[in-house]
Length: 108
Length: 113
Image (cartoon, rainbow over all chains, first blue to last red; front, side, top):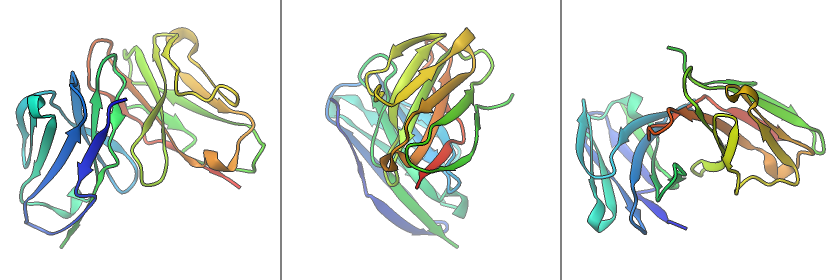
């Protein structure tokens, strides 16, 4: 099956700093989503982005489907950005395969 | 609009006991998913329903796990008997048929002693 690798596994930021999270996947996909899991375990969908670039406030994401990677940018990080960021991909049929996640800690 | 509702939020049981989890998806969402999330890992799909039909249950350990979605709305996931290795978070998600975005519930955290 498709493999999803996320990097870095862990990231510690000072409040106000910017960061880039990466997701590599092993095969062509028709669906790629970024999620944030907050410290209480709630998974929130950030972006549906099988290709191209999207922005939502301080967050933006870019997927280069031909090179099989996606990037999530967090600018001016805040403590509420802490949690785990997951990339999930789907080859076909609404079956999402999640990466292991990037644990982000933002310090005030 | 209410999100995906799951109950209970936490469950502690002894091994070999049965346990059941309940999920109420977002109103109008006909696709429902159950995921398993082990500590330090991403969620893994157990089963996907389109209305009341299970269209993908290839990852569901059918010797001890079962699920149902009567009337195509609420769903229950059952484990009988539970094993120590079943300790994890069980997540329910829903989506509109044909839409890619999945909305997750808060999960049920299971501890098997």
